[in-house]
Length: 256
Image (cartoon, rainbow, N blue to C red; front, side, top):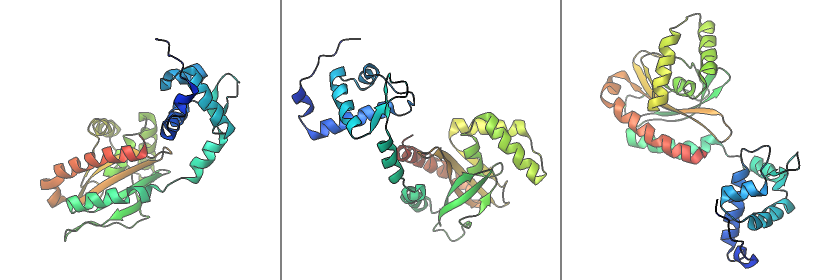
């Protein structure tokens, strides 16, 4: 690796924006590193001279944004940063409402947002469609995982062992065991395509497509578009493409 030329003190004071950007880069380098990183490791990750990183770290330590790691051999994120993050928690519902509205406006169909709670999906927001014949569910209503598009979308984001555990538990509660091999194969296809489907499985006469994602805390969510089966035959592919485009936007918003 080429040695970096030390920068004079005045370089870091050139613009406030540059200093902030470099401090943020240091903090991001420490994200996901509970054991901390050495100054040399941080410098390599952010592509800055070690002397510059040392000055930034010293300033961040003063504000308790970073602290010495438990072993004393590195730097890790500090308590003040965690406190600020906790104070700045946003509601996933509030953040995604405009996205749901855009999907409903583009497709004319109802759009649902659900979250995994325990072993069930709970509807937490809905934007009704504009078409005369539309599907509507109540916010707060619980839905199964194995027969819904949003449920399969969430299952596909889990390790197979965890998904299998939830699937078998759901079938045991319902007293109606299914074909595990077939469902796991379907979840594999969902992972590849990004789109899950419910083809008259949960409710006869209603089909749906869904996408799953995790928010910044790691919670599992799904956005789904239910529609009468008669309309799905003609427009299902378009609904899937709309959801895939929305998934890219949602992932960017969630920082994933």
